[in-house]
Length: 326
Image 1 (tube, rainbow, N blue to C red):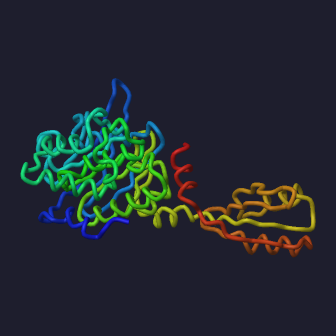
Image 2: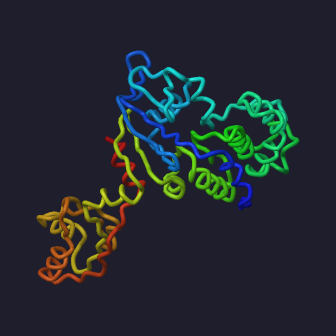
Image 3: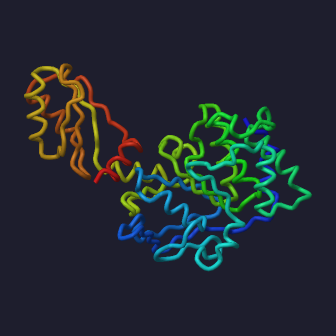
């Protein structure tokens, strides 16, 4: 676990409000829209989980925020700075870890971090201390004299995170930051991101929904260039729970007959087999309705034994799949 004193380096400079505001952002590649007229805000002190299937527009949006290219339409601002009109100034406030983590493979870690620090305008008198801090924070102490090409994927990812943090930016854009890390390293990096996010603006992209739920204050899901959900993990689960889902196991008849009788109940929307041999079903009620009483009454009427009726909690994976499969 990281030492608490190490977190001080991220809060050493004066607190600055650096909200990210995306307004009617559209990005085209030829005639194709990678991102289609999206708007959202990320507040200072918030960690936003940015989710979506491959090709949904996540990386395109993050690249536009980091001034990698100019939006086709709309505007993006970081603090009061426009990525269109003040790109050079915006870059000074952003730390970026791209998905493919491009590094100068032949450079030793220490030399590479010194090179990045100079590029980012870190005062020369403080570069050595900043490098030592990044080596400690990102767990590179045992590898710091190696060339980057000699490192495992996990350690290369740590070097990428170190270069994104070395100039103590106000905004962090992290595209798959824990890719290639082992479980212990993932926990440590999550804790680091949560601490950084207390006073910085952070956007974190990940395919691992459990990671987003553990790390982020809010989730934004994008699909086919459009925002399809925006809220806390708890809020999204609550919205999805408009349809009650229960697991039911019934004894007293064959599975097909029970299946047919359940489907005929007015307040049931969907019946699916969980285990046909054991007469276990997953039942989804119609929106806003509960089917539990009707299921119980059906069992009494048919003289069946209701062995189990258990609510099934909606998982983030189910929400993600439902929102992005259409």
